[in-house]
Length: 367
Image (cartoon, rainbow, N blue to C red):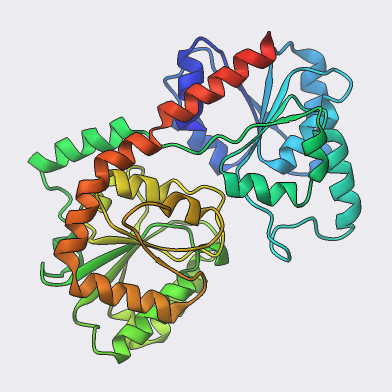
């Protein structure tokens, strides 16, 4: 949202953000503090019913030219609140639907039918990847008949920030990550920068590290992972500590707002996700010239396609361990190839492309 909507804001739109209260909203406010004319409306609860009631009140009391919902669930609620007002409404789909994980749950068939009915009245649905589009068509085939338009826009990254960080980092190598971790240059350093929910597959990394330790690579490979206060923190730390050989290969650091300095000091980013919609991390890593070892799961495979990334079957710790061995044995060549691809990645994933496409949709629905 920050990457895309900054371009929308700079094009002259003034934005009102509606969201439940909480730490995420507070952080978002800090992130966009410099945006002129921005308004925040805090919903009193995360309850879907109360969100619907709050939205109805907001739409009655204020005038908006356009609504842009972020995610299928809030998009469905907003479509219901906007059903009779018919304010132009865009819905960006930031996730894919995985049976048994984040599907419709109890009374799923009824919820699915209701969601299909109201979202078909939206102006445009914007999946963040082709994988995301095809995934949702399996659940909402009626979208193909309209009247809603479906226009996928691939996620993008702030290439300028990465390039500026690279320039600063080239002249001042701080923080010195290896010194902080207490490891020498002879050790290959991998990085895991995702959250610890099951979707992100950190348990697969721990299994792969156990395999590497048994194969005698514990002194040649080290993994650093960023950790914040979101879910699964304590369970993950306990799992990492359970095997002493694995624990000696892992170091946890606090999450940071700008991950690029870590990327620039990491020999490869490890992404063992079970599913994604269109992740930004591998785009940022490739634009920084950092190799990626990633799974072939939905969403991630689309980003890694036609890149020099090392790809392994999702959920397969043995194959991940094999790819890490390839990295260990061929680090200079793999890093050189990734560095050569950085300019191509920057051009391919620049958010300006996505933001321009989104701005075109804004303008088209307002005509």
